Image 1 (cartoon, rainbow over the protein chains, first blue to last red):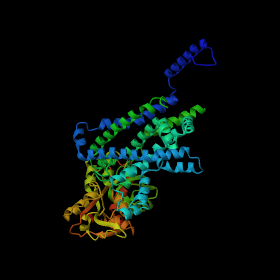
Image 2 (cartoon, rainbow over the protein chains, first blue to last red):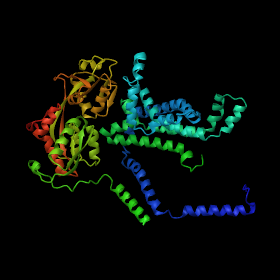
Image 3 (cartoon, rainbow over the protein chains, first blue to last red):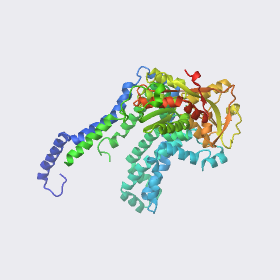
Image 4 (tube, one colour):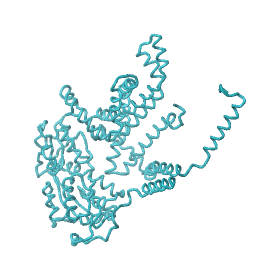
Length: 288
Length: 273
């Protein structure tokens, strides 16, 4: 009805037939060259999850999960992942804004470097953190001398390790949104005399709201699953630095049943996160 | 033509994926060679996967090289890690040929799952305190480890080095609270080497293997504890002939020499079970 070039009378049947063709195409048999690998991919991704469910010690589950060490690990995981997300929001969003808007030479190099933890093996990240913030690290040494505070083997150390690994996920998501957002509103506000900070707070941030939420959830999920950097930088001590992934790993060595039970809990949390993200990623492009 | 070539590629890839890690490129296992005639066995070849405790890393790497040199055409691939974790991997069906554990407990786990029969103890190891070279906390003995504020790294209790350290503390009637329970003995050593902890309790062999990177402080013999190292060729070994030969080599006088050089106490055949 809104088409400008075509007479309204001819437009409706045309659109209908196109819709019909599309619907027919979606019902058409999938070419096997795509279908077989697609099936294999789906099986490959789903079978391990099925394994967890099939092998789960359902009867012993209440006993295994009531273990205070399990509850400690779960509490610690949720707390540290949330803290890491909060830190990432406070520091990562401004960095994403700078990376998106600041037009200076070398900014692309900075962007590549700060998102490096995305591809770095987390254990390597943990070693790097020790060398930077450890008791003998280049900054950690000063911190120890001046304040007596050491970060490895503390809960704060867990938050640092998780932030290091997860913040780039937030930065990369939010930066993309900053780039794509319409500058027209910001320019209009600027013409009306709004300060840059007011513009950022009242226009830019609300504009990228959905991406900010998605980035934060992604960051939180990555932090929740963090293992390598955490065990390397923060060590493994129940109640202080032993998060769920560490508890699963340690349990696997002595009590595989407990490891499966812990994994189930992680699976449930992951499903909850996916459900939270559904609007953005699982409905095709509707939220974009 | 183009399409069929692509089809073949896809099918081959899928086949590989399905075949997975379960298959082995090693030739079909020949019947187990009787121990006495291993060295004269003419047909030793192929790769064997040896799952060995992290503390055996240096000694077994040497043994593997010597074995490969003595039997051209063989290749010894190692998977070093915490004995408890390796035992779990083996009982879960990992394609291992030989298991060398740092404790009888983890070997028993494998025997119980029918993955190995008649393991033999080949060495034993005792504990030592490792401190950073500069020893910033001035640790001189076990009793220093209970000092408040002193950072101690131990192995987690499910790992042989953690269990053996716990015996030492029980013998000395000390309650040591570590800042971290690491996943294997090498991880403890790393934390000491980096100076992130003031002390760690590791095997005497680890202090020796670390060269000058850490300082060792001996634990008195009357409170020290030891752990025995059993080895076994696995029943499902994909390359049983070579696997048995390697096991025999570890148990031989030549194998014992390498182990004692690295600080292990060799088990004389008379003490073997």
